[in-house]
Length: 181
Image (cartoon, rainbow, N blue to C red; front, top):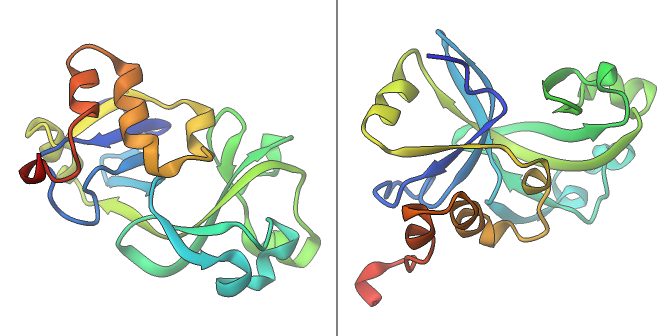
């Protein structure tokens, strides 16, 4: 399978796992060894200032920390839009990548446009994501860079499906709990 790095995985309505129900995952790495990404629409109640105040040189301390996924929930990653992608610790696509936190904390942050702080990541072992895709657990969509840093993460799942159109537009209108319909 071709690498899905830089793509969105949109949870199908059949995913009931609370970690991934209505999730939009930005895939940041994908190979034969597995895949890693961050959930873009799981804002936590914690701010960067509350959780990781040492990141004040990298991002706004009043920004929310997002739950990137259930893997390594104590780990922190900063996804950013770089003025110069060569300054990224890891480039995902175009000028979007991860801040090399050790370097940024020691030497000062590179010049960044937008940032998002994540606690934890979403991860898949070898062939695990491929199996989930075969079961139609995920809908693949081209990443829209503005969606990565959206001001409305709660509406992201519906917005991306609506934009995809066709049958997905209908899916985007499904209530969170269809039994209440």
